[in-house]
Length: 217
Ligand code: G6P
Ligand code: MG
Image (cartoon, rainbow, N blue to C red):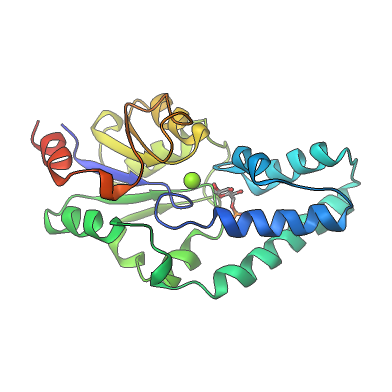
């Protein structure tokens, strides 16, 4: 049975993908090329550094180390301006309902995110207090699909990996959960997340019985 839950942040708890997209697009446009929503799909769950590498590839741009570092900072500054304005209204459907359900049963909850901005975002939307452990981009050396982020989270929750469930919206994140030997649950489009053990469009599609069964089993 499942005795701990790990949530990805971007795309699972809040829809920050649109802000990441706007900030990357601004940089692309400044550098003289287009960056589409479709191309943004491959940025989900991927570290800031890796995203910039892919973006420069798309634009056919070779950067000096100095430029690379500057663009990383510039993108993040633009992104921070967007998240500065975030509030509870940006929490995705039924996320508080699921968190409340788990909290009422004293089930440990962790965050497992590639973002270095995870804490400020959770503070902005007033969900920080739900989490018993936070593992984010500041704690990991290997990016998803490497299982590192989720294995650290399991250790912090003092729970064996096979007893953990992971909610993820990114292909790399589902793969990371599978690689960690955890139960992967995709939140988002089933075609994108075909490697997930279970799949829901969003939390409003997932019944509370689904959770009670997993916990009781
Ligand atoms: C999440 C998002 C990615 C983002 C990454 C790093 O995984 O899905 O799109 O690139 O976090 O975010 P950061 O806030 O550190 O730039
Ligand atoms: Mg995500």
